[in-house]
Length: 136
Image 1 (cartoon, rainbow, N blue to C red):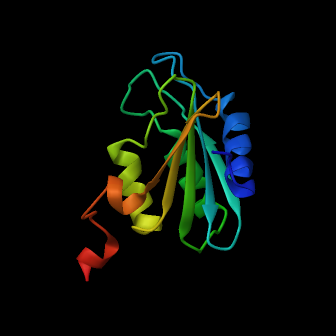
Image 2: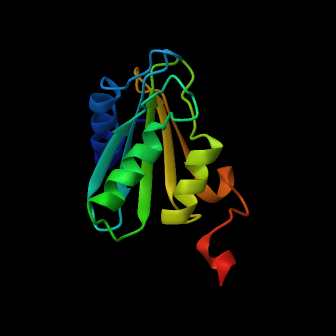
Image 3: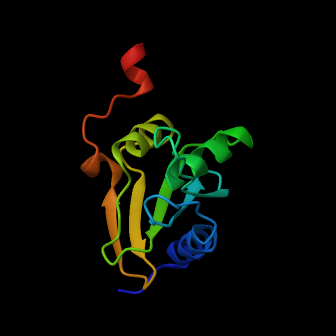
């Protein structure tokens, strides 16, 4: 199935930034692009650290950039591109951050460098997410 224009735009953006990943420990180069509700796109790549705990995944870098640059709308779509044969989904930390700024209807795409892609609804891959509404 061919990618839609928006999927291709997100895929291309994630592939570009994926090349900037700092991954000397895992060797896994990951890029992410997120589409906000107002149409803005933000990107990020994974940045590893010798302490491991200081490592930040591509998805979180993209979300943190969106927040730091003033994005106010919710995340509508997330594209994660890995250099692995089997596309990698967001990790648990990233899913929790997406839960903060997205919704169960946020669409998650995972793809590899050959454009093999899977599509998920966020609510399906992270059901019963802990969200800000739990703190009311």
